[in-house]
Length: 301
Ligand SMILES: Nc1ncnc2c1ncn2[C@@H]1O[C@H](COP(=O)(O)OP(=O)(O)O)[C@@H](O)[C@H]1O
Ligand SMILES: [Mg+2]
Image (cartoon, rainbow, N blue to C red):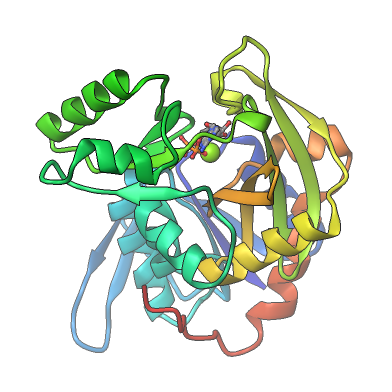
């Protein structure tokens, strides 16, 4: 099979592993820096150019689009899709997952449990917004944040108002969310491939931060998921239309709550910590699915 990994970081662990395993399994595989692709759009014959060369149709693409390149990256991925390449993450699904508000709306509609979440504008009543999120302490999240940047814990109504006002002034979209205090500083990352969880890690902050992102100094340990957690992760992946993804959940008193679904989750910590060959599971999934007609994304949000 002819596979393209769309990635800006050829030296990135996940990209390297996917390439290595695809090669081992006899595929022609290329890492393509989507940020350097350009597209000539014309009726019936769009051309994707890369370093002065026209890219022929690939059997499958594996998009690994960085958050900061979402718009350009998904536009390039869409062009590959329109050539008929199978994709492990449709451009629509990537965009859907990158907007936290939209993602929570989709998850909630599909019946996936999420923390109580409120979104509002400056015209809304601060006190009511705070009450709807369950009172302080509460979490305020930038709609397009990542790696824990843009997630704030407001301990008091005063602090919450000040943060919201600051975001309003800057024109930043945000969400107000119930603080899951029973597992503050801890979350679970479940790597989903198809309809299975292939690895799961618990991430724990080491320095007392309420955020457990590894980019914020969080550490990962292997974990056994409960049936409910496994089902929740798979349901979240399905709802988002992302067959290969990392689902972040928190263990709450009322069961697992999904925080986010990541379309280009790193496999480094899961592979190193659990010893599972996640890259192989992904390439196997591509082999099994790329030959079929690509399914249209039916969610439409
Ligand atoms: N509602 C919440 N209650 C408690 N902790 C939270 C809550 N939401 C997020 N966190 C913590 O903050 C981290 C980052 O939040 P997340 O929504 O995943 O944003 P990001 O996209 O920046 O990773 C989570 O991994 C978790 O540890
Ligand atoms: Mg996160």
